[in-house]
Image (tube, rainbow, N blue to C red):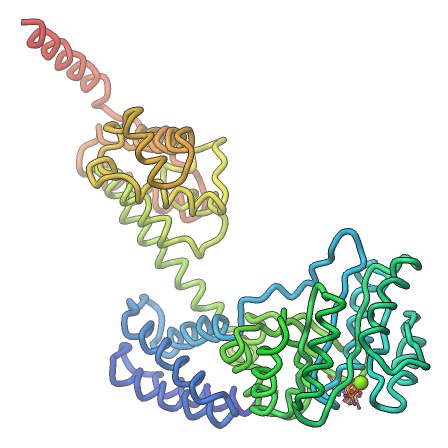
Length: 479
Ligand SMILES: Nc1nc2c(ncn2[C@@H]2O[C@H](COP(=O)(O)OP(=O)(O)OP(=O)(O)O)[C@@H](O)[C@H]2O)c(=O)[nH]1
Ligand SMILES: [Mg+2]
């Protein structure tokens, strides 16, 4: 579907190849072409403009990562923006308890509702559900037969009332029938019209009102491009849509609908139909689609690796700070922010020399990152530099400010104290020793190892000196 777009994109990026850096001027030039490519692919004008603005904004502020060419970096930025443009989406069907989960399909005539109804039933069957399909299209002669034929192919019962002409009643009865016969998913196949008309809108709105479906999906024909997007807008105003299903994704269309729907309606694409057969349904995954559009999976991997390398260098810088004993909460946070794309926290901590061993046995998972950030942001700059300042009352204040528990604050400060403990060990070393230790550590940590034990000459002497200082202070106070 995206062939033409892919080609135009790669032409545009090629222009950046051989240029030394990303500059305002060359990015603008490339984005001009990207915009034309999007418009040619029938992407909504406003969507194309916004998309290019976002990419520009990001590209111009981007630090150029060593070992990467500007075109590779641009591919990455465009990829990220594409993913944002068409996502996020949870393409699973949220099944309800108690059953049945009622899914309603709506859309224009010929968009592929009836086919999709059977595809969804098949999809649910594969998830160990027992679906039922409902022939709620009482307008088109043959509609019931069509659904029954499809039901026969996948062994899914079809609920129909041939004597009725009221789809609202049929749908309501079908749900009672599903309960009686232990069917846990009900898919309603509603009638379509050639264009959006008031009577049709009233009918689907009434069906929705009476049956209160758990999910309402709009079925759109990808081949109809911007018309599809416009009808999506009209349906979205009348129905509480939960998502869009784009059919005929296998066709030779330009892809504009796929890229515009989310921005125009605010509703994501959840599934795509990729052929006439009943198993030709796919969950919609924005990253896979974006990668398909760019057709540059290898470049994306390369950029990811370079990014990881860059982050490791940042980590090396931080650990030099640690070696100097000046590593505070701010540095800690910077490290985490810089590496938040790198995967599980434990991996990140492994990259921070010393932390792996300091935090051995302490579990920090990704979901806690948000909370840790909140807690650190609620500290004063002084507290971030010197966590020893944080006493019980400050702890309560920080907890209040971040919506965390005082115990969580205490836990974080304690963990951080352990990290600083490791740093203090390093602080006893001479400058040259420190630097070579830093280098040594960074090499080791690159391989995911933990911090080696260092022999230091100073600690005993230092401890002694510290004790002496304390004694002196006490004396002074008692005087
Ligand atoms: N290539 C392709 N064809 C599809 C796909 N989905 C549906 N079709 C075809 O599109 C045509 C219309 O599909 P239907 O499922 O009958 O569409 P509908 O929305 O129920 O139509 P009405 O009930 O008349 O409103 C059929 O010939 C299908 O085989 C798809 O993903 N890819
Ligand atoms: Mg139909």
